[in-house]
Structures are given as C-alpha cells and as structure tokens.
Image (cartoon, rainbow, N blue to C red; front, side, top):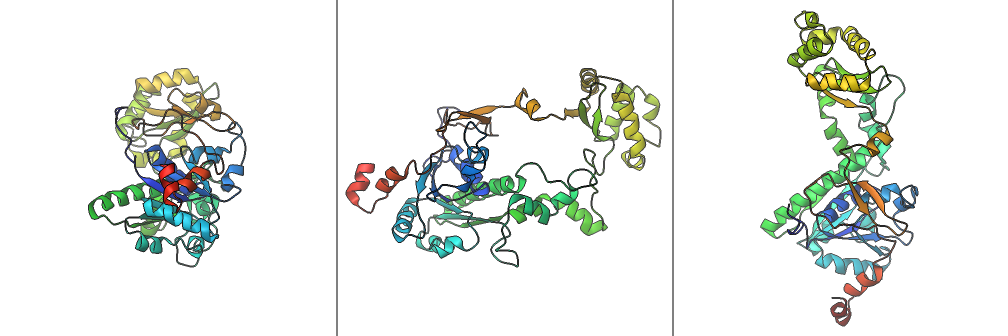
Length: 386
C-alpha cells in the first residue's frame, strides 16, 4: 500500500466498552487500520493498565493492545454519562464490548437494543462461553479457556500439564472479532444496516482444536502430548547440536527423508530401506529414527548443521529464547509513545499497512474533555469542538 493512500478504515468511528485483552486487541487492529477508537474507561482505567510496569513504565498487556486510541472516562451506571455514550453511538459505526455477560445490558447498552435504535450500528460482543448455556456467566480468563477447550491436553510434553505461554485465547478471539466487524461493515455498505458480531473465547479455541477433536471423534483417540515432536510425522522435532543449540527439523514427505538420510546424515542405505522409506514405517520406529538423527546432530555444531540442512533443503528452525527473538533479523518493530517513555514493540503483522509514524498510548481520560465537548447535547459546544 502506498504511503499516500488512506488507511482502510479512516472515517470509521468505534466505541469500545472494553477491558483486559480480547476486545482491546480487536479495536487495536481497527485503530491500526485507521479507525477512530474511543475507549470507554472507568475512573481507575482499564484494569490491564495495572498488570505490570515492564514496558518502560507501562503495562506490557496494555501497551500491546491500546495504541492509537482515545480514552474517555465514563460511569455507565450514571444516567448523564450513559446519555453521552448514546450520543456518541448515534454517530458511531461500531460498538464493541467484552464485559461480563449481561453487564452492558444492565447499563442500558445491550447490543440488540442499540441496533434497533441505531440501525446503522455494527455491534460486537465478546464473551467467554457465549451468552447462553450452563457456563455463560462463568469468568473466562485465557488459561481457564485453554483448559476447558482441551488445548492443555495436547500441548507440550508428557507429564505435568503446561499452558500455552501467551494469551492465545484472547488473541484469537480479538482477531476473530476484528474480522467479523470488518465483514459486518462490508455488509452494511451494501444494505445500510448494521449487524451483530458475537465471539466467544471457547468457540474460537474449539475451532482451533478441530484437527485433534476430529481425530478423537472419528477414531476414538486423539494426539498424545509429544513435546517438540509431531504426532503423525517422523522425523519432526527438536535435536540438540554439539554446542547445545536445539534445531527443530521438519521432514514432510519421503522425498525430504531421502535428502535428510542421504545428503545430511550420509546414510544413503536408509533411503530405500523399507523400515524407514515411508512415513508410516518411520512412525513405527520413531524412537530409533529420532535416535539416529540425534546422534548425528550431537557430533556437529549449530552453524555446521544449519549449513547442511540448508544445502539439503530441509526445513528447520532454531529454538530461540526471548533474547534470541529480540535480536532476530526478521523481527520488525514499531515505536509507540507513552507518558512514561517510548516502547518498541513488534510491528503490525501486515507489513503493507500504512500506519501513523508513532502512535501513542492514551492516558486515563486523556481525551475526556474534548470528547465531551464534541458530543455535548449543546449545539454551540458541538460547533466549537468541530
């Protein structure tokens, strides 16, 4: 996208009654694409602001999900503030909320009612388990949904359970919400009428669990927890070099096995040996196959092994720690300004998206005065604000 072109969502106004991670990530994507996002916060601010101070004085979670937004402090239980929100929604394109199920409705901001009142409005509700059913009102934090959706049961190595080390449920739900909102805006462009988007963390994780779930439902068994290995392909996993690096290799087919065995391991006799020539055969002897590969890796250093794998066109990656990620040659960064200092974070995954040079994190209520002026019921105030 050329820098002179407008961003895709310029002119779109989003009102976000949001907290924590999932909904803020969705609206962050919309803001990155040019939408104006008014974040409604309680007097103390989004509680994610207080998770830590590791990002140059800011919460890492808040910094991740809130760049480029405006902060308006409101009390949605206060009639005057609720009227202010309704005046903003009259001119808004999108309303998104991820409060506990029923909380927005109790404050007079139920999505269905808002769309009846403002037919152009796209609404998005993010919940843990949906709005009906026995667990609809349960709290649904990321780790809890990882557990409920079975993700933990297929994650990591055998032995003690371990969580996925990032907020995978929140992130996935936020991206699904952003996609759904864009689809609804596209539909509105044809019909003139807004539509609902309803996303639950559990639904998103269940969809991500499709492959192991279908394996279970149609064969009676699902994948075992095999650490860095692949449940159905061999050799596929992590192998340690003589200097202590762990390289993960992926042999996707028998042609690649021939390249690994003949060109890398220097064992051409293994290529056509019926005990190893096909993936089903290698899976039957996985321990033996992995042992052969590991023995070879253990005799060579990382640099040498990388060169051999590249020459044979075997897919591989290095198990990096956070220092390795921070110094990775493919890590793109973007700078975000904040009241405590600039934060250099991973860039938007769409490298072609036109963005402001340095978006900023809003202070709590930073834009309250101007927004209240802009959406005041007083006509003269509205003209002055504009």
